[in-house]
Image (cartoon, rainbow, N blue to C red; front, side, top):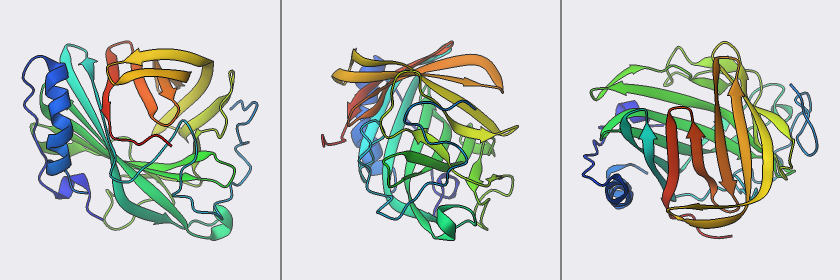
Length: 268
């Protein structure tokens, strides 16, 4: 598998206004880029999920995945203008770990997330997801490249179920199991752990509201859920809003605000 650090990375130059620049980067990146408490419907952490059906066919309303799709967000991170691009790669990674899916292989889809601040690439991450038979989407890990002046400076926050392979950063942490990224039918007050691997990563997500209507530059969405994320590694919290068939449409933290401005995801 080719990782972001192995290929020449694009540099975005963002003319003002940032919205116009970010819309432009949809087409530019399509060319430039290679292809805990648990409630309600949230699976218990000690229950092994089954991936007997196609784990790369995503029917989860709030965590869709369509190969070749692109989503673009624009906003601010501190004083910088920020653009984030989600690239749904037509590739897969196979995880086969004792204690996961009865030791049988799980084929995961790959989402590449690239973050630009004031036109400079600052982070590129490969995220691995699979949908269990009950519709819950599980997170199998991430490989992180942090950039400064076009050079990879660290892989902080990298972790994988089963640990790294030869081509992965040697500092990648090992998880014994995947974590719930999105319940099959999220309901208000649901609590789940997308990341649970202290001291490398930690994240607790709570559904604080459902059935919202929320407007962002990409459009107005109904039946939106609001998820509050917190971490033992940081005192700051983050709110995310997820829309059916689209996934995350808005992110708000203490020093960051991102809204979806364009998406090529097709309606189910």
